[in-house]
Length: 335
Image (tube, rainbow, N blue to C red; front, side):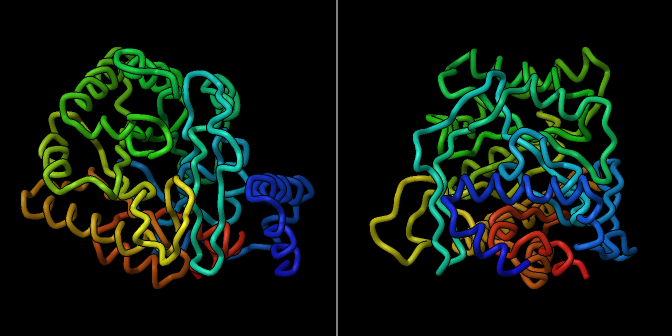
């Protein structure tokens, strides 16, 4: 298996990504996937009830690995307690020009400028409708690249309205650095417009699904404070901390391509943001049982997982760690 993974990693990043996931799907079809990566992923010490949802364990897959919800069953059988798919947009889009994914193996890092490449919300709904997975399912939603102003708000509304009945929770992505002006939605006046629509749909459909917000690690404390002050009024169920960073100083290399940096170089920066938010919420007594913090960024090992929880994470996600550590990463962290 190790030699096979090394061969796959020699392919161009997006090709190896597709080959690897399709390989897992093939193993699943012939009944070998669980046998190859079998372990008890439902141990009592890992179980958690959060957001009124029963997680078999606290380790999940971050959005971006499975953009179109085509591999949820396979990822759940690798032992992950929850899988977040997307980011999905209303209409299919190619994303940004290639090459747009760059691996830096010496630093266990990836820089991507993908730009929400996906097959659209209708395709995703067909993938998850009427299906039961052995994990909690989250859907991460965002706007199409060309959308601005009210159209951008409408994009979130369309995705949310179509997916609300088919998932366990929804994440509002305002923090990808690869969609122009998306991070402007960290401004409270803009964020309020999004959540006014989200909460209207919840009320109209009478479905009180948890809605999380995924934030950037590059925002200043004043911006983060304003978001935290509005958690209750916006009815935000949790924060995902954090998305990728555009701060190239976390990489000890010159001549880097533009894009979001993930992996080990993001670990300290995302932990700093997580720790700050956790302390703020505890100080303001806003950290309720039905509110969660999900720590993501640079998780490769059990030590990394534990450090996230020590900094305030109720749940933990990974993505780049899966790329470098391979499909046994959940077993290695949770066993």
